[in-house]
Length: 52
Image (tube, rainbow, N blue to C red; front, top):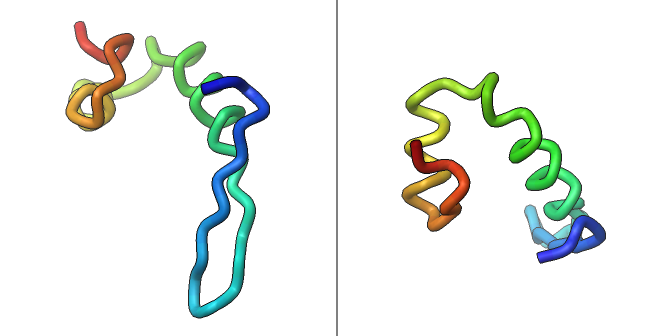
């Protein structure tokens, strides 16, 4: 997934674009500041870089 990836989430029938690529890129670059629980949750979602 590239930095420009956008997911559209529907809430109460309204579409909301979410810049998932930007969020993922920022989160990965700041992973040293994440708690063990946060990293474990991301690893459980299949993000290999979150495993320590």
